[in-house]
Structures are given as C-alpha cells and as structure tokens.
Length: 424
Image (tube, rainbow, N blue to C red):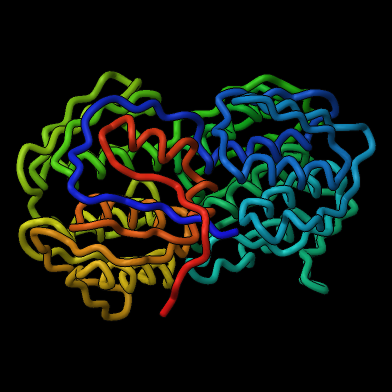
C-alpha cells in the first residue's frame, strides 16, 4: 500500500528540533566496521530506513548486526565473504562504500552496483581508478564491481573531482595498504572528517582530515571501536529553510552550525535573523517574506547539491527572482517539474534555473523523486493554499527520522495517509 503526506498550507513553524546523526556519515561508518575483527558500536545513529538496509548489506558478507534505537552494534568475523550482492544493494546508493573496506581487508571484492536516489548518473570510475592505483584490478561484470589484488601498495592519487564516495572508498582501502597513500583533491565534507576520526580511533594513521589532501600511512591491522556519529547538517539545514520559508522561528540543536556557514549566511541575505550556539546548534527567525538570493551548488565548503531543492522551494516564495545553478547532479532539476505543479514560476536551461517568487503557492498532488526533493515538496506545501498531497514518501523516510512528528510539534498540520494515488 502506498502512502502520502497530506500537508495543510499556512503554518508558521515555531519551536525547537533536535538533529541526530548524519545519514551521509553513519552508513560509511557502518561499512568501516568491516576493517576490524570484533564488535564495533556506533551511536547517535538516525532512525531512518537506510540504516537497517546497510545492516542487511553487512549481514550478507557475514557480520552480525543489531540495531536498537540510535545504536548499531556490528560484530565482524575473522572470515568475511568478499561478495556483497544482497537485494539491499539495489536500494541503497551508499552500499558501494563496502568496496574499499573489502578490498582493503580481503584484497578482493564483488560488490553489486548500487541503487538509491534518482538524481542522475553517478559513475564509479574514480572509485575504480583509485583502487587500481593501489594495485588492484577493477572491472564491471554482470552488474557488479569486481576488484582483486595480490597486495595493496600506497600511491599518489589525484581525483578529477572531489567525490565523497571515491574519497571514502580509496581511504578505507588505503588504511591497510603497505606504505603511504596521498589522496589529492579529496572531498572535504564534515562526513569525511567523521570517518577519518573513527578510522583513527580504530588505529589508522591519517593526516589532513577536513582538507583537500589526505595522507594515509598504512597499518597492518585495525581494532574495533565505539564512535558517535556527527549531527546531520543536511537535516539541520532543512529546518533552517523551513523557518525561512514559513516566516517562522526554529531553534535547531545537535548539529555544528559551522558546517552550514554558507547556508546560514545566504538565509541572512534573504532577511533571516540567525543566532549560533557554539558548535551545538543555531536559531533562524524570518520576520518577513524572504528576499530572493542566488544559489550555486559546489563541493563542500560550497552549497551542497543535497540542499538545492530547498533553495528552489525558498526562491519560489521569495520576493524577487533567483538563479539556481546545479553543478553536481544533472537530474536534480526534476524537482522543478513538481514545483510547477504547485504553481511555482520556474524555468530551466541546462544546469541553470530561474525562479520568480510568488506570494503563495497552490496545492496539488506531487511526487518525490529523492529524499531531499520529497522534503522540499513538504515545505513547499506548507506555503501553499489548501492541502498538498506528497507521494512516494518512502524517499523522505530514508533521510528524515520522525519527520511528520517534528513538523507537527513545530506547528504544521501534516499527516501520513495510506492509499493509492489518482494520477488522472
């Protein structure tokens, strides 16, 4: 049975919301547990669908995984399978991050090509090229990445683009390689720094976490650890946009505001008052209708592509005209088709979109194409006349724990409804 959200427009969101661990970090941390025999415990895990899916991926290679509340306990055996080809792989883009740990520890891996959000092509060329630099062979065969090495030896690796996934896979293979690996033009996201922290706790030797150059001195063996996931900056930013779009007042706790410096600065340009609380959280107050600002997606510390749907949604209700430029994923503008259903005034031309703000959107049935598009449509529905039906909400459940409950606590009128859509 399908489910959708009924979103009643007109709410002004006010209150506090807590942000838990980052989706874009926890799944990679779970994969890192493959690198050490024994029991690794990961706390502050978000209660989202992707966490048990990753648990299924790890079970498919021989791990015992117990998920209770916000804690994942992963027991990795001495003898692992090198084949990660469970059904869960097709549902989860991040499942490909088991490639690096399996090659690092077992010197071989067969990993099913991943699924996940429909936001455009995300090839694995850089993942494979990095493993080849370390001494592995890597090919695509029968829908799987097949990698094998006699030994892994440290190398100088340049990434053509600061890919998060490629950085993570190469990093996790390199920690057990012989000698020193240098990854240049590495991704700089806070989630990369988080995995570097956990690997260091496991006994890895890594320099340059949070910079574009990672230096990894290989070690013979890692040991299990206990690690707490950093707060989810994308979820935190979602609530910041929610405050601005609904002319509300939201305090967000559990995320480092410095991971969102650019976002919060842009919202100030849109007319919001922003207050930060050290590295613990922030408050966004939007007293009047937001003003139009321009947005350009870029790798961190630039504006995250994951937040582009929220920039479009905010622009749709802002005063003036905004230009949004998408430089990362070519299919992310699919979201705009749904915004037009809600009477948004938006046009696309290549990787640019021009959005002319309207005072009020108009409700309609809309369909989520990915996690962030779904959340963006819910926020847009809060700014529309009438009741907006948001369908395919399983996407939202993959990234936002207790989304409906949090919105209702902030003053929204939204409910989850079972039933099939009428696409007439």
